[in-house]
Each structure stands twice: as C-alpha cells, then as structure tokens.
Length: 133
Image (tube, rainbow, N blue to C red; front, side):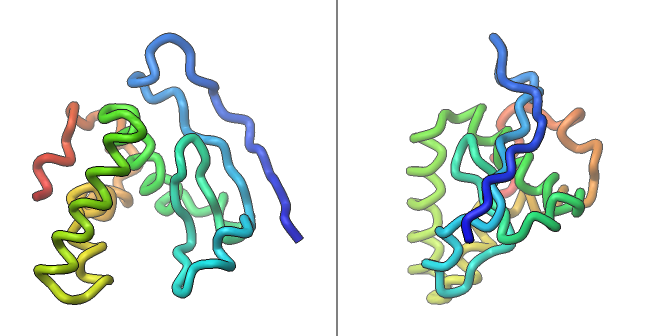
C-alpha cells in the first residue's frame, strides 16, 4: 500500500539557499520496490523518499538527506543529478564496485562525514562538497 505522508515543512520562499526548505516526505514509495538493494532514504528533489514512515524519527538519516537538499539547491536540480551520475560512473570504472563507487561520490562523502553533526547545515560553506573529492 502506497502511503503519502506529507510532513509540515517550511516551503521555499524567495531565497531557497537559506535552507528553510527541507523537502517533502513521501513514505513507502513504490520506487523502493524496484531497486535491488534499496536505501533507507533518498532525495528526488523536492521529495525525500523514505522506505518506512518510522524513519522520520531518525535525525541523522534526515540530516544526511537535508545535506543533499542543500547540495541540489546550490547546483540546481538537473546539474546536480547529472554530476552525481557522472561521478558515480567514473568511480564505478575506477573501483569496479558499485558500493565503493557510491561511497566515493563527493556529495555522499560530504553527507556521510557530517550527518551526525546536526548543526552542520547552519555552518556549512557554499559548495562545501568540493572539499570531499
């Protein structure tokens, strides 16, 4: 059963980079059923897709996804996803392992390195993902 669970979030106003916008939650999306090893959550802007609605109670997981929202707002939606996939495929050629390729995407490196720091987004510099190459 598909359950849409829209959380009360601040909607974007004039300046999206202020990080008032934290996504729209969709719980148990059908997309997870299509993936061989589905993640617990992912961002398909402006949506944060959660495998289960209970995951909304895990601040570290949500912070990881909020970091991706910020990255997308800085780069733009299409450039972010193009760059993300390009880096993934280059990494896949280098590491010959999908999981290692994923873990070494600079956007993921930034998110994993800072997801436990719940104040990170308030102190994060512009295009900080460049420091995680």
